[in-house]
Length: 83
Image (cartoon, rainbow, N blue to C red; front, top):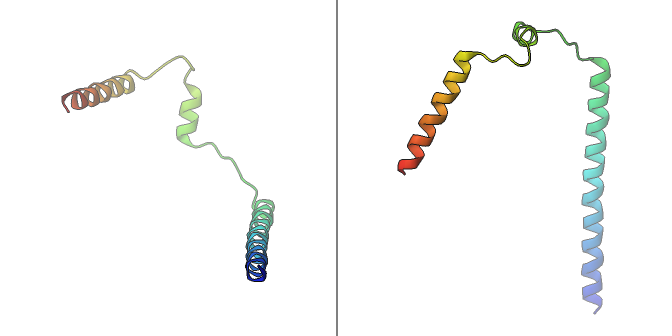
């Protein structure tokens, strides 16, 4: 009985040590990311693609894009029906 309690206490101490190390690592990681975020704030500069996307009305779709997607779907369905 003494051997079992000794093994359980050893397992508990290893578990607590492991969980403590993970907690310390994650805390350090969060603090480090926060410091880097404060030192280098994100600057948002609109790219050309984003400007083009924002300029188009929400309801309009590019007919070439619709045709390409439709063709891809038909080819996919055709290949998987034969299998």
